[in-house]
Image (cartoon, rainbow, N blue to C red; front, top):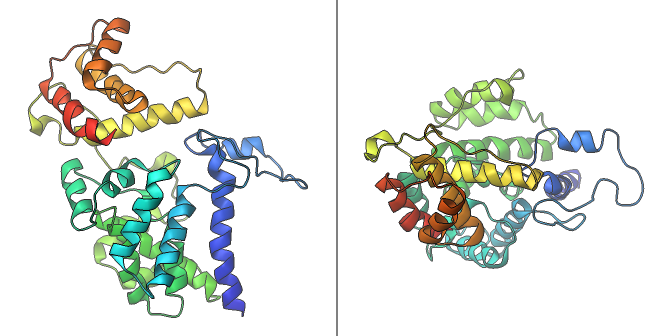
Length: 322
């Protein structure tokens, strides 16, 4: 009975935490603590709702929505069925208020086979928290199984949308810690146990990140986030990833304060500035590259189309994803 209560607590607790954090998503760090320096007792407490997506009080986000679809699939199919899970996620995404950019892109495909890998090859990276945020049901499903079984399922569900192997490693560590809590074991000891069933590459990357003294403020960037104003592909390895990162950052800043001025500028204020701002406008307003270009030129005449590769990306890949 105790394990059952722990399992229920893990799933419900993750949903509660998700709902508490929903209004603060994409906003500045520390805002929750600044808003609620002490607990609010009575009424709905800190479950205020709101945020960039207008969440209702106690409404959870895509994190829990995808987790519930995963749990329902595991139960309905008596185990992991990628095709069934894929269709459940696709159905959910059709009407979901918030879907991560990478997740939305891959779920646009009818079949899961090879989709995440193709996305990874196009972007040059696919690591992200999207595969972990929905991962709790894996820990519940494998609570009485071996860690090898847990690692297998965590990796398989993670790789459906995120091909980078470190997504699978992170999901395994996450599920192992929850599994340990359900079983009444030390959740931090579970980290070392998870490393024992993962490749050595997992230990090399995750050990410093999981160290007690680690802080995001002192960590190094794990990817290339810059653009060179040259059209040759070797000069810009991942321009689509850079554009995705910058557009997401702009949206996050606007979600925090829609009236704030945001400066987007490169050395000359022409090609790279235009690439970013047109990409943002295309996604925000559903415009074509031509419409976004006309809008930008009226406001910033210095912008141009001198970098043909940037224009091609906006007109082809970015247009399809926006």
